Image (cartoon, rainbow, N blue to C red; front, side, top):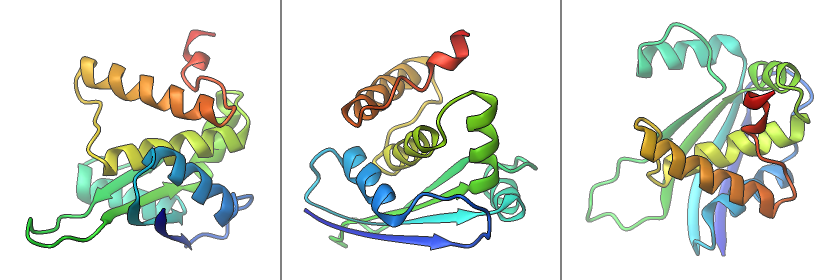
Length: 152
């Protein structure tokens, strides 16, 4: 499998998982896909807020944004797009939800990749399908259901 993954660190926030962890989570989300190119950009709250405001009309930082590549049909490249993750927000959420930070990073990375692959959660049926897939992929990594915290 040829996975071209660029991890950009545009924040000084620590701790952040290493490139190998991101590669493992991305590869898991790709579910055997033979080729893919994508970027994971790790940012602070200001950049996350700017992007979320510009592209989603929401004036707040968010944990993960996905920007699928918009290639013409005649361009046959494995370019999936970009994922932007707000490091301070991911850390704050994992603490608030009492999840291991690594598990939350893995979940949001997989979530972002699934968006690049065309999955969505705007409607209830789509959300159930996407959450079921996330749970299964995380389970394959030995990570508990990320949605259990909602029930406590």
